[in-house]
Amino acid sequence: MVTNDLPDEIRDEAQLEDLLSTPSDAAVDAVARVQGDLMLLGVAGKMGPSLARMARRASDAAGVKRRIIGVSRFSTPGSEAALQARGIETIRGDLLEESFLDRLPEIPNLIHLAVMKFGASSSPAMTWAINVHLPAMVCRRFRGSRIASFSTGNVYPLVPIDSGGSRETDTPGPVGEYAMTALGRERMFTHFAERCGTPTTLVRLNYAAELRYGVLLDIAQRVFAEQEIDLSMGYANVIWQGDANAMTLASLADAAAPPFVINVAGPELVSVREMAQRFGQFFEKTPRLTGTEAPTALLSNGSKGHDLYGDPRVSVELLTRWIAGWVRCGGRTLGKPTHFEVRDGKF
Image (cartoon, rainbow, N blue to C red; front, side, top):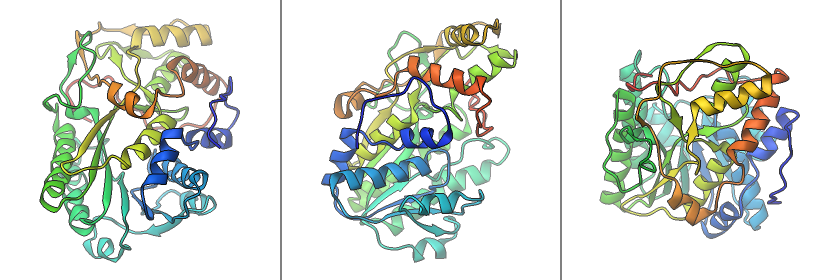
């Protein structure tokens, strides 16, 4: 099932979803070592469906019989049925309702994906509720489970572009209210891991990318539409979402108390200017670049994850070609800009 054969182009969403959910060898090995069923909280977001499907495929490849359960409000039509068609059980409800959380089944393994980023500036109270209060509720309810929680590289400060990126042992320095709530989420999971001995992984993601969403798509779309691109946040990390999914699954086996912390980021330092020029070559358009690169950026060092779980299977160059073809052909996108250019933390 696990293959390194990658196409030169992606024709449709069925092929895209298949690639996004193809498990790595490290993911298959991890789910073979972790005992029991797995539940994903907030499964209907950008990464949840492909991660749930990968968990299903990795378990099948490992010969492990387990339930994969996805929990969400499922507000997008068809999202629940699509998971069910892939052998994933679903439970519909609002995680912020404590009575609903209490009714969820006891589960030995949990992946927490329920987060809020965009709209944080306009709805700060809800952002704190989802990013800090909810994790405390989840930890109390599932204190006996093994938990992998999504976090973000936004917990780090902006660092010099020649620094190699923030490492897991660096002191956090969140910029803006969203980043503060992300650190608050980590603190809640850390508190309960230390108090209750709950094995936990904190997955600091920076940034997942695929053909329908991500920093590279944002740049490609602006070049294609001949829109301006702000260079002030001149550099970024990106990682193929399928590789981010695989590293997250693999990290579940390393959950510990105190928490095991892992950066999930690509090895390349991506220049926004150079990426815009690359897409300009694909589209035969001249990028409209504004501003100047600042000497700092939000950068994460992903070498620890690569050493543990293997190098990402999809390079930035291949992902760039896939995205260029997708944009040129009018492929569907999620319509959710990343706002990668934001430097003040206001999302």
